[in-house]
Length: 114
Image 1 (cartoon, rainbow, N blue to C red):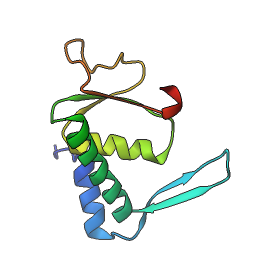
Image 2 (image 1 turned 180 degrees about the vertical axis):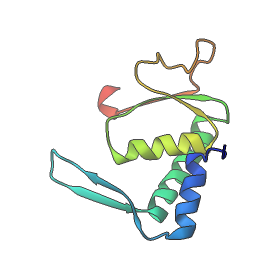
Image 3 (image 1 turned 120 degrees about the horizontal axis):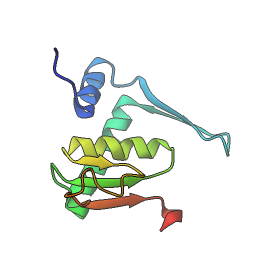
Image 4 (image 1 turned 120 degrees about the vertical axis):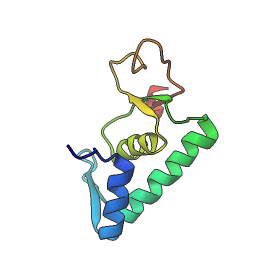
């Protein structure tokens, strides 16, 4: 059975193949807006977000990041950045932990929920 690729590997492969091709197209149904992001742009956002998580929130490999964000392209970036660091994601309904013994190192919420 072939080894599974993590999101960082998949993004790196996409960047080597065709860095300028669209990777994410986000439609804002409320405003009618549309955002199209290339592989390179997503890679840049993921790298900067991973840096923020590591440098400002001290997230490290093996840590849990509690992510409760609305459906938006930035949410995908946060997930990819977390996995790039080797951290694990706890989603809504999980109580902020992947298991009962691992509290989250960081909690990410939408600004209007703070």
